[in-house]
Image (cartoon, rainbow, N blue to C red; front, side, top):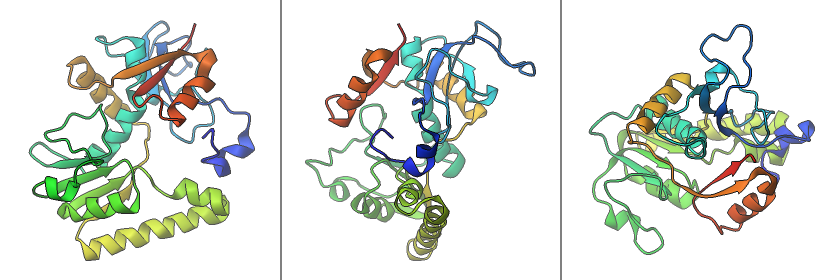
Length: 260
């Protein structure tokens, strides 16, 4: 976003407060909110297109965007979980409906993904190393080569899902009135193409608020089955430094901003 991605949506709304993940204590609740109480420790995340952010002393979220914080982790650890986990949840549970015993390939999974087999794409040929096919592919890189590999490694009836949907990029290029319809056309063209050529489902995946999913993510975290390693923390006053470190790939893992 700092580099201009999504400007067609957000530029008219500047200045903006950035940030999506949050973990902290409830400071106040609306009159109709019964599921949360003042002082309660919670964690959650805002939708990608939310105009309000979490890089602030007091963040505003709806009750459907928050769940009790996992008791077994700190606020720093908890704040690294929601957005990434809810994105994966939407892909695997809501879209592909992965169940026990099925095979999943994550392209570009990184260090936070538990796996039966890991492949270093920089030194190994993925297609020759990986044996068998998969029921779902989650492609976090989303370039033509990874799309080709992912779709070719799927069983018929499987799901290819990419985190690099083209809606924002096309809207930035052509403006919202033209960009969104163009993006919809591109998506449906690919859906139809892969349905007939490979017999698979094709989807762009975006995070969305899912209270049930967030509750399940909390349970997994408390059971020690879900962790998101935090590589470095910065005080929120050094947010620019934190972003630049990520942009320059000086820090590959998760970065968390802390309030003083």
